[in-house]
Image 1 (cartoon, rainbow, N blue to C red):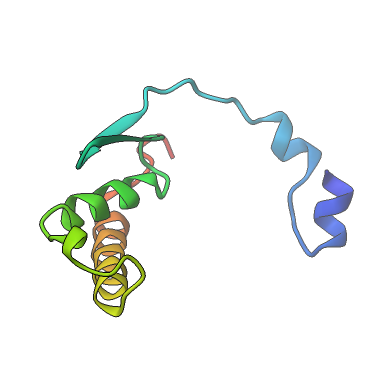
Image 2 (cartoon, one colour; image 1 turned 90 degrees about the vertical axis):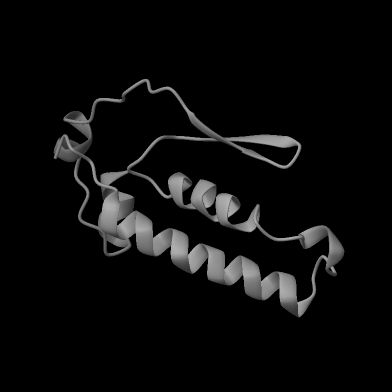
Length: 95
């Protein structure tokens, strides 16, 4: 892995990996319409997906074409807002 990283412009070393310790975490979830969506808790991007679903839950997407311009626009704007909040308010407190 170290050689592959180096060959592709990366900087990860065996020493970096030796210090890694996986954590077992409880997933976070958001009910969206008739589904429950689970994500790994912050500090990853999964929280942004759940925030975006929360935003989209306020719109009648069923009344719009699934791949239409209006739905696509709402999805993009929801993700923009979700990432803005994620970048502003989500961090790994352990680092």
